Image (cartoon, rainbow, N blue to C red; front, side, top):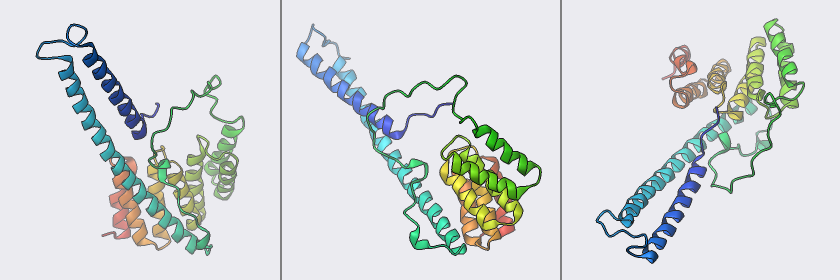
Length: 255
């Protein structure tokens, strides 16, 4: 199912409609009665006034939503950056080398001119590279066979070979599961964080955030784990992952 228009696209469409209404008003006034401007009480200009008022209301609403989304993205990005900072500290890495985290989901950007239509995809979707599905299946098979160390290595190689692919976030999530099974909770936490932040609206995002909370709890980062569980409920209400949050909070003795 294709994604709906972004707030930036809606904002741009509203601007276009405003310009078109202004042009229509000018044309009607210039034509005068009998040439396009009715003389009855419910005139075309009255209707235009109503349309302009509704467009102003919608434009204001879009601006409010844009600001709300920007605040949510900023907060979630800061939380993800904080978790990455703490994981880097736990791993003994150089926290000074960490850059500013990218906004989750790409952030909210102003409208841009519509790009040219993309080239048609090859028959059958054509979204996966020739060997991509085979490499992914090989890593899954290793995990199913109980060889979690090999599965983690294969999923890591997969992510390096196919960054940004349709299976990348799921590969990160499965890598986290494999690392957790080997007892590497630090590596698992980072993999779950990458799976979530790489596709916060993807099919594995809610599960990745839930498993991230579990890994943080196993690392003794109880406060961060409880905050992350709160994010699961806030971002994915009604999801299967959100349904597991109360039990997880009880295990961690979250406030």
